Length: 340
Ligand SMILES: C[S@@+](CC[C@H](N)C(=O)[O-])C[C@H]1O[C@@H](n2cnc3c(N)ncnc32)[C@H](O)[C@@H]1O
Ligand code: SF4
Ligand code: SF4
Image 1 (spheres, helix red, strand yellow):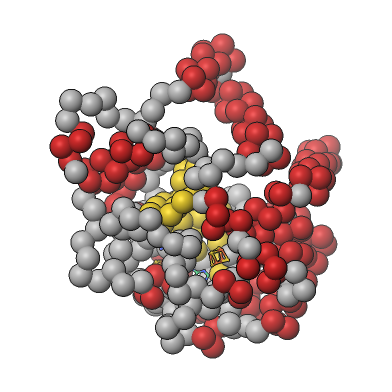
Image 2 (cartoon, rainbow, N blue to C red):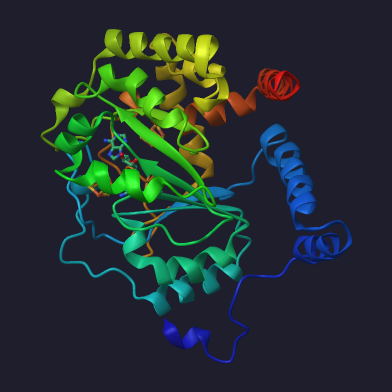
């Protein structure tokens, strides 16, 4: 596999877009250029549809320094199978360059992705946009263009009961990095659903960009089914998030209203049965193989899926609703600026 790298220009593919980007940076500066390209991507991908493989995830490692109660990763049969080495991963990305793979957005996950910082630093150069989902127990590298999502599962006691003693304090220390783009991400389950308001209050003034909420997805074969809230409580949780978003937190709750509504029990089954995310995204496992149907693996119970992505992508199919949601969000942002 590695010998395919020989005699070859290694590195991200330079497209016309990259050249335009550099030119624009020289003319109007990096920040303005980034803003304009973001707007362009929003129009191109979010309103007019993403090409296949435009978003997805790489399980860059099968190792983790924690063993959380709810984690789908432990249903996967990775033990005893070695993960790819750094050069093998770069070889894999190089071989994708020979295809029409779009190299648009990549989420680096695992296991704990920051156990392989050096490799991610090399790998993320291939993608236009990078997201890292981390448990926050390892110091975050200085990567100002990356979107970090730190998993926080409630109050300190609850979080540590789910993730292990002492984790919360380490996260609090590592999340205090105003120079980075950090959001916090909570997976709601029966152990932590009562912590939602506390969680929002705790994180609202510490410089993180926002809070992402997802709901626990049951995984066949794992003995943690008691974490599933059931349909009625799940609907109550979604109603609560909608109310908190309207009354107090607005876009600090980083899930659009429409997505929260689509996740409710009267709508969600049709959406997860025909999961758009599964159809258009890519996911690679720690051996560089395609993982199906999504990063949660084949044991995930799709009908009870609590991941926001299938709902988000379904909503994007309804361009007018999504355009309205975007406009409302812009109006809220502009309104806030005027009030300041
Ligand atoms: C598998 S972890 C990998 C990244 C990193 N180790 C972390 O904890 O953020 C990615 C995300 O999946 C979430 N997750 C794990 N098991 C889940 C499940 N059964 N349902 C929903 N989300 C889950 C985790 O809480 C985390 O936010
Ligand atoms: S830190 Fe992430 S990968 Fe590791 S066990 Fe917890 S949820 Fe799973
Ligand atoms: S678990 Fe959720 S995101 Fe994954 S394929 Fe099933 S419905 Fe889609």
